[in-house]
Length: 254
Length: 347
Ligand SMILES: Cc1cc2nc3c(=O)[nH]c(=O)nc-3n(C[C@H](O)[C@H](O)[C@H](O)COP(=O)(O)OP(=O)(O)OC[C@H]3O[C@@H](n4cnc5c(N)ncnc54)[C@H](O)[C@@H]3O)c2cc1C
Ligand code: SF4
Ligand code: SF4
Ligand code: SF4
Image (tube, rainbow over all chains, first blue to last red; front, side, top):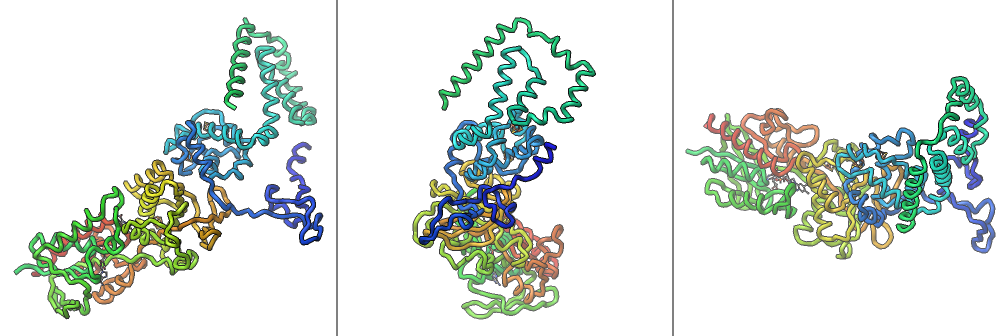
């Protein structure tokens, strides 16, 4: 049920009157609220415009900005062979995470395109497989770091809205570790689903089956038997300290 | 009496062939169509040569000097072979020059008539000759050779320049399917020269493949890594006029999928090499074969690139296909060796 709902493309209200509306991305449609042309009020049906889909400039200031950072200093080397994407740990999970393409967008200063990937652009897990394979020694892994920083700088609002859930989940994660000294996966799962507004799925057939299975094989009860790690108070303080420092650092950088 | 050998064409290939033969004591007749020796590098004032940016004078100037000072070489400038006949195992040729007509008998012949630059005006989509700021690599080579790097339209330094590769090559539409081999390397070389001259000018190269084969690859890496030359994948399909005296390149960025229309101050077309009218002229006059690309056809492209289909007539340089100066010079030597062997045997 939930799946069916996702598959159906939501009919955007924006540009509803356009025939073959599905061919045009939301970003390219512009609607004026109160449009008056030559004294005639054309609001309503005639207020819709489709922006040109043609790129009309390369903006090298972005390239220069990246090149000046330590992580991005080798951006000029990349010749788009795709070995980084081919070796990436994350790409198979998130096909839209494409280090090769992100580097190209940065080279040409194509912020319009980059903006579409704010939700995935920071997903690099730092495994460095790409950097190990890159024939030009671009160090794409660190390029992803430069990218994340720049995205934060250029699209703060998008970051905020697109990454809200992730921030929330991070909080749940932290509280769990600090509070219990371990992860309660079942709880992490349910809380995250709630945060994402997918509560309904939690009582779906798949979930029910899984819970039933875990009760049956005893895994559900083993959680109760797990106590806190030995001497947890000390570790907890260390982690709290670390997080505090990291936060201060982040704030002072911004 | 010494052997007599005719060399047609005084470019790098013909010059080296003539010089080597003269050192063997052969009497060489060097017939050159132009007013000067040195071939295309001289005609278009190449200043620095790929792959190592050495002054063209060190190479072509050196070859010309040797040929001009050799007592065994007789040079005919502004000349043509107006008549050519086989005479047993030898050849009778009439050389028409400003000094009149001369008929001589030769033991063997080397054809080194070289190539012509593809004329981009033949491919209307690039608007060459329509806009002053659309030039090609030979024009830029000549401009830089004359110390003139400015925009042709207004004499100002350009703010951004686009190179477009494969103009007149690898394109059925213009009838040339082959790769011209040198234009990629010439383009990255010129991109570096532009960036060195105008550090504030952005340089882009629109490419389908970048074929800087062998060690020429070094220049390509340098262009990107030391001079921030940006490569963009996609062939430009149209050049139109833009705002503020710019020219707009229309193309598709095939890596991101999507059309672009970018204005540039200057566009440089990497026009390729063609066999030119001289190849078919030689084929007709000397009874040689042309290949399907319009260059002279070697007897065997792998075993004997320097032999023609006719016994006693040898080929050297870009008349058999696109190549770099070093290859042309080497082939001049190989053709000289073979022409000498043939001449000695039948003398
Ligand atoms: C823009 C450009 C830049 C280049 N830069 C480099 C570079 O930096 N380094 C490099 O290695 N290579 C370079 N090349 C390649 C180089 O130009 C050629 O490899 C070289 O010129 C070939 O020498 P050739 O003697 O075979 O022919 P050509 O140089 O073409 O010489 C042929 C000669 O024959 C004469 N001729 C033609 N027809 C007749 C006739 N019927 N009768 C008498 N004479 C005739 C011509 O006038 C000419 O003098 C470049 C090529 C281009 C297009
Ligand atoms: S970063 Fe390296 S591996 Fe990735 S596309 Fe560029 S050159 Fe290739
Ligand atoms: S370091 Fe990041 S970008 Fe590189 S392979 Fe690993 S996950 Fe992918
Ligand atoms: S050398 Fe480069 S520009 Fe020239 S035809 Fe070949 S691929 Fe095209």
